[in-house]
Amino acid sequence: METIENPVIGEKIVFLTSSKQSSGAKSLMEVYLSPKGGNPLHYHKRFSETFKVKEGELSVQIGKEIKKLNPGDSATAQILERHRFFNTSGKPVVFTCELLPGSEGFENVLRIGCGLARDGKAASNGMPKSIVHMAILMSLGEGYFVGIFSFFEKLFRAIAHTKKAKRIEKELLDKYC
Image (cartoon, rainbow, N blue to C red):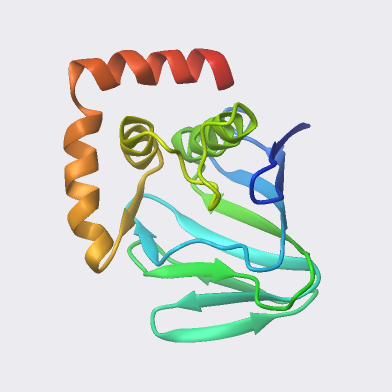
């Protein structure tokens, strides 16, 4: 099993089953999320995402509804369903995240993001400092943001398709994946 860590935000991810291992059927990860950790509201066009808590308490927003999940509880964001997860409990939380079908691009975003953080190329929120790196991750990850972030997303996706960004993307994939 492959384990990656983001030292900037104190997140650890263990790949239990990769998309490649399952011939694209699923991606299954175990996530160790620090207090105040989480992600912004987004959606996916190609896969569902299921969160199942093992230890601690995880808040999950699907649509407008926010649920607090405890050990054994789960919640699934279907394709195109806006969602996010976050930890307001003040204690670390451990949960699994399963994508159906799997997404090698999503997995690689996690690998690259953690690698950039290890190499000092991430801001205090764990996001890449470089606009080009951010653009590449948005393009690879198959996630789509909502609200004001959707405007920036379109700009980042355009940047990600430039010749320079494609060269940098290959370098990132070679180094971290």
